[in-house]
Length: 174
Image (spheres, rainbow, N blue to C red):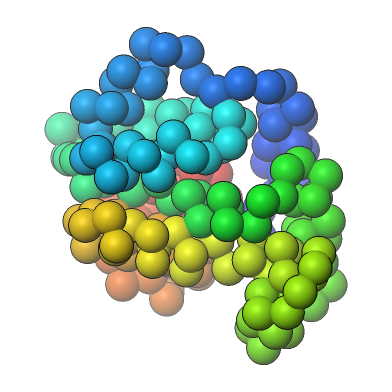
């Protein structure tokens, strides 16, 4: 689980409306395919700003090894959060609920197929899977899909090249 400092930073950053500046959006457009850019454009302003920051940190860590699929992973890893429809207050509740159920997969999946607010929390907690499904449907590179799916897994459970996975994990600060 992310540190309290990281979560607090994400919380206060999410209170500022709007996405990244137009110049950064133009750069993102060059990094993503059309279907991926459409997915990215559907993300909330704070999530798009976060993704641009993650991508910049990944490029700083990996330099020329930050190819298109790695940059797409950095930009799209949280894209599945859109399915929940939750904004900042709901995401805080979902994060607390995740701590309470200790990532009990059965409970989270039951919530996600249920109804009402619990469904939205379940979908939020399953955002890696949801995002990976959307990216696979959009024709994203397998590395982009895999990192989106695995970005909250413990390092030992990650199937990606550890150097790339570590760079993405450090850049995401989760």
